[in-house]
Length: 207
Ligand SMILES: O=C(CO)[C@H](O)[C@H](O)COP(=O)(O)O
Image 1 (spheres, rainbow, N blue to C red):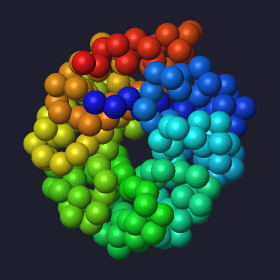
Image 2 (tube, protein in one colour):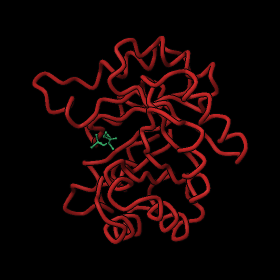
Image 3 (tube, rainbow, N blue to C red):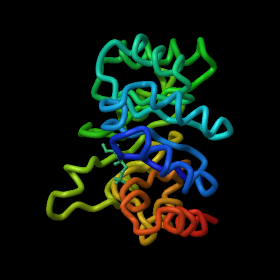
Image 4 (cartoon, rainbow, N blue to C red):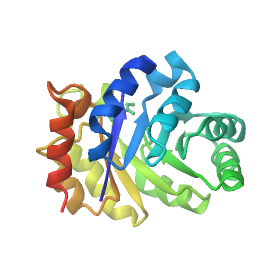
């Protein structure tokens, strides 16, 4: 299982500083949606130039104009972009078309999708590299939030998948047991007193 850091910070300087601390412990460096919205796609270029050997994920959460938005991010240096599973099939297909032109990939994010298993399978048919079983920050903040619901859905879908939704040192073993291909960790790394140590601990928990 690969480890992805989600950098939900707001500036390029913060992102570069965080990536410098944690890159050696992760496989995929994600520029979070707030970072891309605040700093623009130049942030993607800055991270890719600083870490050319890492897979750089631009968390665009595209909902429309899939080909155009993906094309812009790939040209900026992204290796992977996210498109929302709730988008029209044509939006996902458009992003996949751009990905194929650049030899890159599309991750379909199932945040907010009710029937995640069915949509995961449809997204793979549309050409997604993998799907993300994801509970966002707002959903995580609701009482009774339970990551295991995502893990069960991921297991059932029988497609390549990542898991995001408050993954931390206590839950990463369960994420791996679910068969996930990628564990995404945001707050448990960037919110730690020592992000490098937090990333190292997560990496060490992966067997
Ligand atoms: O995409 C996101 C929110 O929409 C986050 O980056 C993702 O949920 C991972 O962060 P965390 O581990 O803090 O949940």
